Length: 89
Image (cartoon, rainbow, N blue to C red; front, side):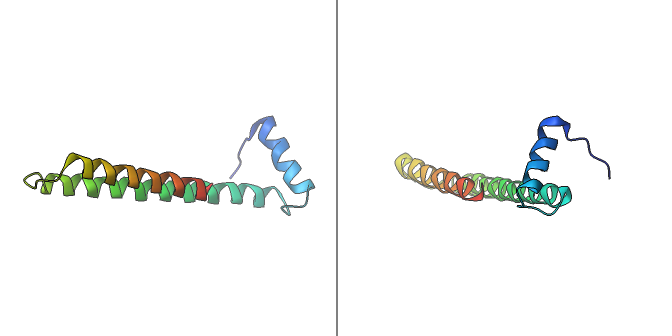
C-alpha cells in the first residue's frame, strides 16, 4: 500500500520517529489507525445504544414516565458518552 500524507503529516511522522517515540513511519501510521479504529468502535457502540434506547422508547409509549425522568436519563447518558469520548482521546 502506498499512501500520500502531505507535507504536514510527513513532517509530523518524521518528528515522531526522530524523537524516538516510534521506530519507523509504519509504527506511527499504525498507532494513528488504531486510535481511529477505537473511535469508530466507540461511535458504533453509541449508535447501537441510541438505537436500543429509541426502540425501548417506542415499546414504552403506553407507559407513564414523567418527562423529567426521561430528560434526566438522557442527560446522564450524554455525560457518560462525553466522558468516554474524552477518555478515548
